Image (tube, rainbow, N blue to C red; front, top):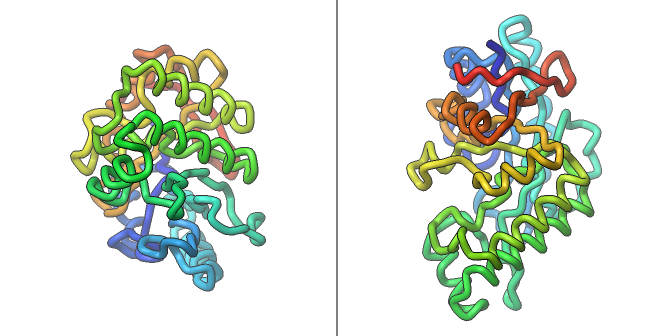
Length: 270
């Protein structure tokens, strides 16, 4: 059975391991493909992004590993692009995961997922304690960045729910999330199924939520399994369960890079 993992992090940004160690772990996990997607540069918050001047080194290391492990695993050059800066060397990457890690506030962007208290403080200070209004502002930003940069894959779409402050059953919340998702899917059909928060014990199911997946299915979304691994042992984490969940919603296939192009594969849950 083919399996790839297309959202991974290394010491080039906020991962704990080198690229080569991650390649070894991907091979040990039985993956057919792995894509590196370290965080793009965000000048307003440099806590976990890759400096712009390291991009040539980043791409060179991927090329080296691709040659060194040819025939054992396919290796792709990706980037988790937050849209904080332009990307003049876009053609150097095989694909871009479009993400939004920040919500706009009068005091500047505030991280949505870095720390629980940081999110709570932003909700209270700038949104009067209204987590749904906070989420709506996030989705507006996500959609704006998607329209501007047109990434290849929509990454961990419903990130504001990570720490449990948002009522996912709220009609206002669901309307904001669905409106943004359907507009984003008109730009790219590739939708990340992200198991990272499950691996880190923060959630009991991947992003996005089932109500979003059901609408995504109806609008032709193409699911891409991703672990968002920041450590070797999380590569491919929870993929079997994620496939079963996709199947229960009604998906029959998933998508991934194979032989240099996006291809469709049957969901087996195995």
